[in-house]
Image (cartoon, rainbow, N blue to C red; front, side, top):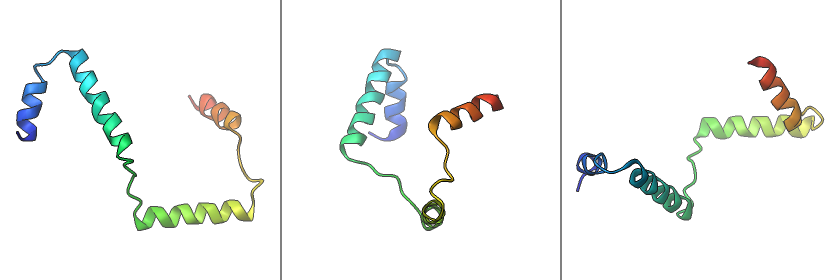
Length: 74
């Protein structure tokens, strides 16, 4: 069975059955320990940020500070 056929069949299911399928697929992905792909550009950016943090570890924000900033921006 190919993807369009599966989607056609699933389209006839109840919302509850669809949600159960989505949850089962999500759980299976978690068990398979599916990790995101980190390309070279992202890896370089993460390295740059880590190096910057190590050079000045006091230049950080607490979760409360970040949440306050986000809430003010709304």
